[in-house]
Image (cartoon, rainbow, N blue to C red; front, top):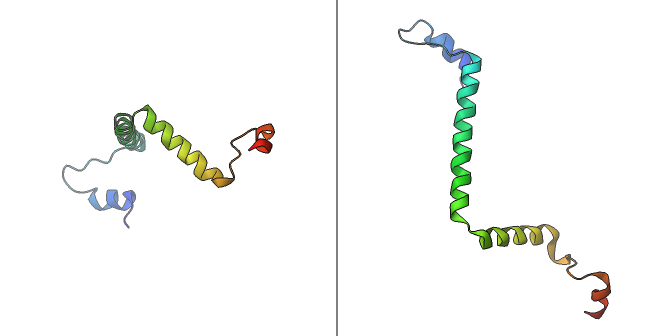
Length: 80
């Protein structure tokens, strides 16, 4: 897989090619990543209402702890 450095070396002599400095490349990459993450969170915010979010939270909590989850306090477990 070619790296950026080999791409720059290969295209350095071609007309119209401008190599960007590292700071500009980093800024572009951060902007693209932020834009993608904003799109993902906007989609999730509009797709799920509060009840759906709570159900996802409870299901994840239950799946993590398994069926051995202690729902009742100790004094109520004896009665149950």
